[in-house]
Image 1 (tube, rainbow, N blue to C red):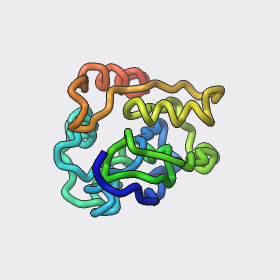
Image 2 (image 1 turned 30 degrees about the vertical axis):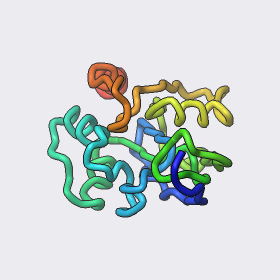
Image 3 (image 1 turned 90 degrees about the vertical axis):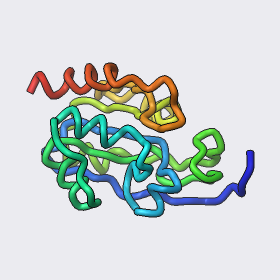
Length: 164
């Protein structure tokens, strides 16, 4: 693997008292770290998928994206608060500090946790395998994932938002 393993820190979570679903990624990409917000790479499917589900345009600004999340009852964070990483490669992540999700659970009434990709799921299980909130691993929205499935994401979102 090319590059230098560097210690990096992620971003604070986005949530409020009305958040009912929590999306957890693994760790911000280089592009995301450049803009200091989640899913900053234009080819990442997260914003396209989630905004599309709610029939909304993708906001152009970080403030617009934050408002979209809160308006739709979505909390967003990464399971790794900090780690050593080469570029954006999940495979290179070492010494991940796992997020303390109680910060969100004391404020919001989260009904379901969605893990965006395999590494997010694996890191989550290290600390939260026995949590009493339902959780589900979804195919990563990363442009590097050829097995992404819009249908799986839509069905997962339907399970929470169609019941409301």
